[in-house]
Image 1 (cartoon, rainbow, N blue to C red):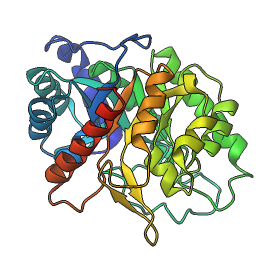
Image 2 (image 1 turned 120 degrees about the horizontal axis):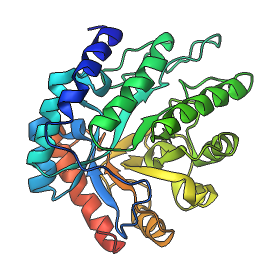
Image 3 (image 1 turned 135 degrees about the vertical axis):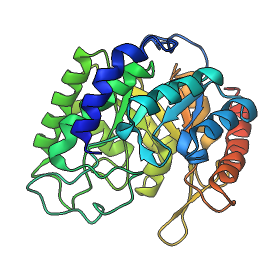
Length: 318
């Protein structure tokens, strides 16, 4: 279904959906002393009910990050699917950390085509011209699911981004301003396949885009894949008050590098969790398994969560 048509159907049902059991809203000023421990739902299963069951009943989590379900990217869900997802979240007493949208995971127009632009992107096949609609839809979904955060990127990585960087920052700034008017915060993920891969690069973007509705989705695993030592080196560069979300996965430097279960790679996650706690971070630490060496996605996530849980306990942060 074309995004424009799906969005019209979605908007027509928004009023009715708000009556189907309110989802607790999150406050940008949440002062909880602990992390929002979460998992990205489709790392467990495309069956959203099963993912909720495992996260809540087995992992003991109260939070979930939404990226895709039922073999559809999150921004492609229709009204009935959103209503069903909301019902399942309520059933399993889960709140939503953010909408993990694919916003701006496309080629920058007018620039050479990126070598990463054909990469798998979790059911997202939107083009440049559709990005404003993707942003609008992600904001609507954030409202529907009771969260104030939407994940974004800064376009597929270019060999030389310098000629385009100012225009990219302008686009991010415009998107943040649009989100701010709706009470939404964009969290830019550092992603090795995109133009901001590391903490060092993230610092430059955060400095250029000063909007209070623009923060960082800090991903140490992606920073490691980008050649950086994420903790302590990368983390120490970051403005701590601009970290608005954190993805948790591990990495091994073998050949081109590969993902690992939490605690099975090179990242000092116990140190990272301790530092986040010390620095007053109280948003999400969200398991993004990625590792596929332990069986099914559910089993890989189960093993990686076991490692993450131990690391959080070592950091006295669970």
